[in-house]
Length: 148
Ligand code: CA2
Image 1 (cartoon, protein in one colour):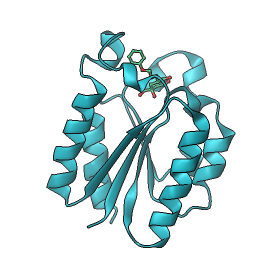
Image 2 (cartoon, protein in one colour; image 1 turned 30 degrees about the vertical axis):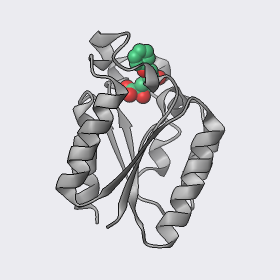
Image 3 (cartoon, helix red, strand yellow; image 1 turned 60 degrees about the horizontal axis):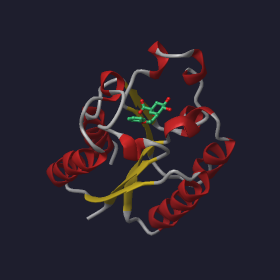
Image 4 (tube, protein in one colour; image 1 turned 135 degrees about the vertical axis):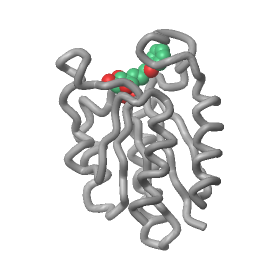
């Protein structure tokens, strides 16, 4: 069974505690449960993580590259949070790994502040999902299944 690696970046540990109008009222633990169900339904093992540190995300993407090389990775779903809009390091880490990566945002970043319109992740991603709320995670898992 291949693994779906779902990576969450800075401040996503605060999900459900503030800004419910933008991000909904479900917590990150709720999102993990939703992802468990979606992965079971699609025949994936789930590895679900969150960090507030850019370098840790880079390390996890390198780990994903090694898993991919061994044929054990279905793909990565990455909500890089605010690093989406700033991080050349994440762009570089994704490029060249050969991994299938779906960029995910809970909110529709294009309907928000201009600084959220640019993504360093998009040019290195296979697909981009934004604006479906936390249900976007389940949709992305189904999308990943369709890419196998
Ligand atoms: O819409 C998304 O998923 C974002 O990736 C979320 C990031 C934001 O910087 C991106 O532009 C879009 C922010 C995550 C912070 O999440 C919070 C949730 C609740 C309370 C405070 C922050």
